[in-house]
Length: 398
Image (cartoon, rainbow, N blue to C red; front, side, top):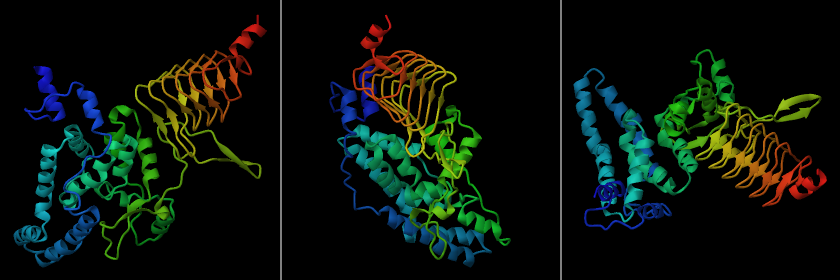
């Protein structure tokens, strides 16, 4: 009885609906495609709401502020009347009604419940009535379509959306050494511009790692640098309601170091070594264990990836752009040079070394102390230096 009640509550089944024999699979199937949204094209889209928001905040309300600047009570009364006239007062209850009716009528109740969850998870604030104008359309056009994609896709869409960038002041996040940063800071009549950490901090603390992620203030600053340049296109009234575009003249140039050691990559020019920009990240998938003293370099142009259910022993080094597959077991003091790829179900003994730009196939076993300098096909067992077929190695070393 308790289990049935839990399933009804958890998956949104009405009292008259029969519980599926495999409720978990039933719920998963609801995320194969985005369910049809019957209110599509009947509600204002993001561009329309952005324009309404700009007009309300920077035109209509400003007129009232000037007119009633010495009469606060009259201003509040007229502002409330204006909210009714413009419809601003009704956007939020309308969107709530749409969400509730959609959830009640949907054939994909698990999807609709997760839509509510992600809407709360990636919440935006009531700053300058932003939420009244944009919460509904933000959840409809940014969150809902990306729920069937990866979490990475969902976070990227939310992070670069007008609603989130405005909510967290990223237009004020300007690289101090960017073209525009240097220009504005050289003008004695302007206040100095620089990094605004709001968006970067929320991305790390609330949207991805959580406080348990062991990131540092330095990581927040580096992430803020990465996010410079994502900003509104100001119109002639300098509205924050313009469309979003990456503007490189506001971007703080790298390299950056975030949640991983800076990759060991250099270019040589006129007898000098120049560090190659490391603009990728480290992606650690589900159920991965990383032993003490292990180091993982950030990607250079792509990402460094550790596949799910992979276990790394102590004192392992993984260089930039290395991609390790799923269900791998790697013993202590193994070293990977850059840009090598491991398949799934690979096992590597202690103190083995993997040269760069190699491809190690699926189900490969590499003996301890081996030196791998060539690609290894699927289902191989190798050992020695250079690594060779295990049977040949044993025969030669009897």
